[in-house]
Image (cartoon, rainbow, N blue to C red):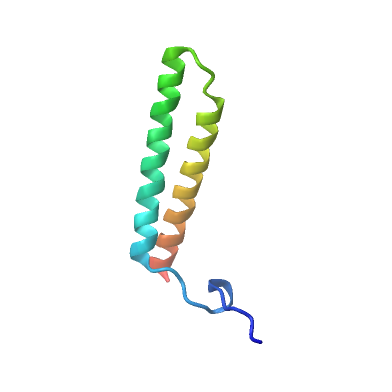
Length: 74
């Protein structure tokens, strides 16, 4: 049985449009998480969890942005 192909070994890559949509989704999620961090600080609750989620969302958005821009250059 043949192994499933991935983008790394010549398989199908995600389209630029889908990468752009995912980039926007994760950017909006990161901004929303930062709003939650600000609200937590105003209320006096610890914001560590929301800050961690904001970091992860922004990291995913940056990775997707770089991936989509690398596809445009190639």
